[in-house]
Image 1 (cartoon, rainbow, N blue to C red):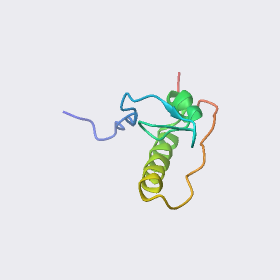
Image 2: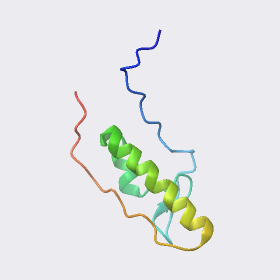
Image 3: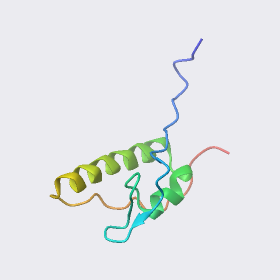
Image 4: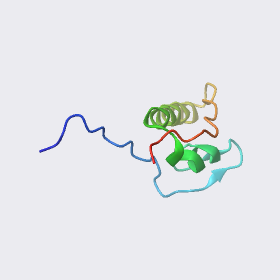
Length: 82
């Protein structure tokens, strides 16, 4: 039986196409910045969900050719329990 109080971990958006596009500084596979890729495991669940939201926004902007790409989340202090 699954405990409904146990949070579901956030799944990495990595699709194993790990190459930074020099034109926009985003991973061609997942649309994360290098910082977001490097810091993924240090981000809290809330921060990881925000990165996913930004990746989706970036995908939409790149597909449409219009709009401003969401900014980089950058580095963070890890807040996960040890």
